[in-house]
Length: 384
Image (cartoon, rainbow, N blue to C red; front, side, top):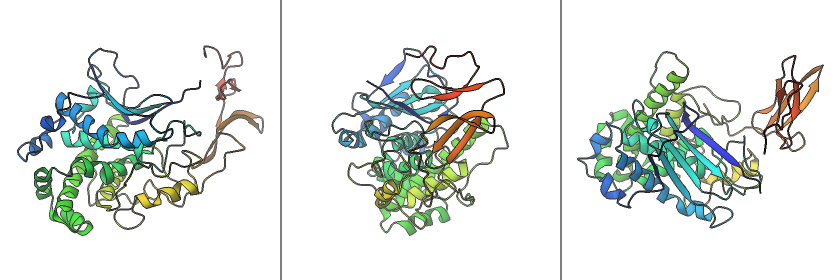
């Protein structure tokens, strides 16, 4: 039986999770509501400090519980369940998801993620909603490493789509009944930020919920900027509500957008009044995980297409022209003009080449993976 493993990373500064025994999995004792509270007196401190162990586990319990029905309904129905895992011995700044055929959809988090600079309980909730968005957020998907048969029950949503899902669908469900905390956060926003919510929603409860999500988005934008600078040192420039990213991509970006673009996306999700309903994963139709007209059309009713709630063009391009890779394949060894290398075909980014060094040749392993090797290297050596 062939197994597919797909990893989608929100932030992964260390590629390895810690191997210690201090690991929380699946859930707590079911007392999530009591742990998190929801009283107005608890909310301000939660916006200023990282979550405790109990709070982190309770947030994951609640986020996962919101979408178990979506997993159960995914193809093949009744075979998928969402779980989570926190490695309390790992200092890696890591949060990601795993998909494996025949196994659970898993959110994995390290202790280092919970203690990252600018982490708060509100930011943790938003970023766990982002991780859930990789499973449930739908189109546009990450085309690399996808399972085209649909056997995994979903395809991993792009980073921008996971951000959009977090504030458009997940946090509104997670915080809908925390009215006092929502009102307190709304009151902290400046008038121009509050106006975004009062323009988007007609009732006070929805406006206040939107305000809390905007405040969490701004805090999350700070964390994204700090992690970006750690990975590629440069001047620290925090994203702001009034400095939107004005760039426009030619094709939809699957990886992480710039921090300002990510904040713009979180804001768009917060003010989009089109909320996903039911258990359908938007755009998860054949050919699974590809950027196709069929996928885009199937996902259209689940998102704002115009106005402030539309996904920003700094990462999303609805007019992307899909490349037909059916004859070329995802990758292959090629020789052109005396050069040997690997040709890659991606439905969104098109055809690209990686040319081998002069002392290398391209070889394809038995499982179809092509790469550049020294002439005496067997590409299947060590495979099993």
